[in-house]
Image 1 (cartoon, helix red, strand yellow):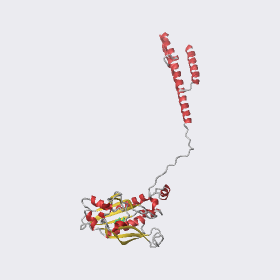
Image 2 (cartoon, rainbow, N blue to C red; image 1 turned 120 degrees about the horizontal axis):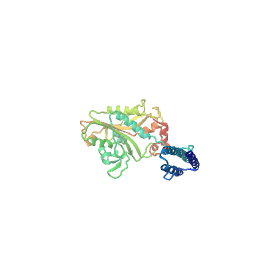
Image 3 (cartoon, protein in one colour; image 1 turned 180 degrees about the vertical axis):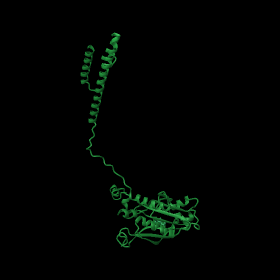
Image 4 (cartoon, helix red, strand yellow; image 1 turned 90 degrees about the vertical axis):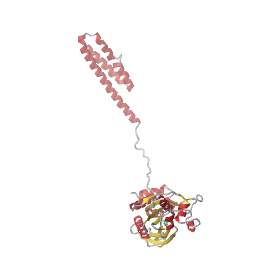
Amino acid sequence: MEKDIQRKDIIEKLDSDLTVIKTKNDLASLKALYLGKTGVITNLSSKMKELDPSDRKEYGKFLNELKMEVLEKLETASKEIESRELEEKLNKEKIDITLPGRKHLKGSIHPMTRIIEELEDLFVSMGYDVISGPEVETDMNCFTKLNLPVGHPARDSQDTFYIDNDYLLRSHTSPAQVRTMEANTLKEPLRIVCPGKVYRRDDDATHSHQFMQFEGLVVGENISLADLKGTLELFAKKLLGEKTNVRFRPSYFPFTEPSCEVDVTCFKCGGKGCSLCKQTGWIEVLGAGVVHPNVLRMSGYDPEKYTGFAFGPGIDRFAMFKYGITDIRQIYTNDIRFLEQFDRKDVE
Ligand code: PHE
């Protein structure tokens, strides 16, 4: 009976203590008050030794049950505190999902890069290697070794930016021909294309001081003008459409003999005649020819054994046609409003 009263008192006291605690710290102090070294329950167990040994077992059981009950109540209280603290934290850190998000600008592939990748794929499928060359070139590679010795009048036709007497900004990608042939020390047959920037002193709606060319060079045994024609016809039809016709006109370049200029059916009017093609129905797109024996010889190839062909389109015009760009300078000025259009118009 006495034990029951004791138990009732302790539990009632604990219940009322529990109603006032707020934090985990409070709870820890309360736990010490009941179960700590000098706590209520611990004090009760020290009474054990005063008891008659026959009563000890039952008293032990009573203490154990009481201790369990206290622990359970403390545990429940601890869980309540935890969930209340969590709720308070969540309320404080509430995320306002009505706030509009930040828009991420999405990049797109530049029209010139698209054209270059398309052309590279085509030529790689025909067994060509893609190479690159420096934009700062030597006068030697850009002119002399391409059969334009110092004082040659054709040097003036490419208004070149000179850095000093020996170095310049390349005015065409043809020095890539020289570099490739010279690097090929075994003088084996080769097939390369070289896309890249070139520079000339020009600046209007269809001429930029910087533009892109796509040099091609094939050297081997029995390579002829017929191979060049077949290759360029394929090139034009693949890039501009199957209906495109190709016309070869005789021309002059010091590094090719014979040389030609190549026209394609006007992209705008399809050959009927319009302002773009000046009513001729044709648009000139590239210069090409059979590699001059002097060029082969200067780069270490025996012109008696090997022949070759080369071509060098300016590819900005293709991009202008394909993407309806009316001013070449837009391709290079990185105006975001211009670039954004390709994202929407031409998503792959
Ligand atoms: N390099 C010449 C130009 O820029 C084009 C060309 C390349 C012509 C290869 C013939 C052979 O005008």
